[in-house]
Amino acid sequence: MHIFEIIGWVIFGIMSLTLLKHNQYNSPSPNTNTNSQDFNDKSITKLQEFLNTIKDLVSKDTQKAISLIDKKLKKDSIRHHDFILIKANFNDLKNEEINGIISNSEYGIKKNKIIKRFLDLLDLFESEDLNLD
Image 1: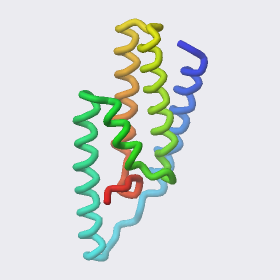
Image 2 (image 1 turned 60 degrees about the horizontal axis):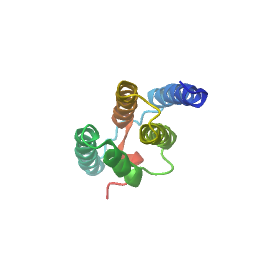
Image 3 (image 1 turned 45 degrees about the vertical axis):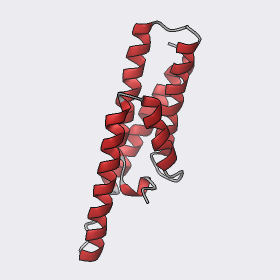
């Protein structure tokens, strides 16, 4: 394992823990306005449909799934940095494969780890993280 890859995993772990703590202590308060609630329900449904599409796509075409999130993810989202790290790790893996410096088994293991991190990140997304208009 390269030193930069180890550093990337460590940074990702620290950022993930920070985000989980942030979400745990800063969850929004329930909204009692019914009109706003209807809007939120539609927004959540739209979000879930989009994320389910991405989750279905990730095993078939990981690059396309990453590209779709890249287009929709707001740059000011607290999850943007985590996504950038996953995207960089995936691009590094593709370069290793293209250059023939990684075995097929190593490639499969690394790709599965990246996909797992990507799916975990998708589960953290909220409607305010994505442009779904």
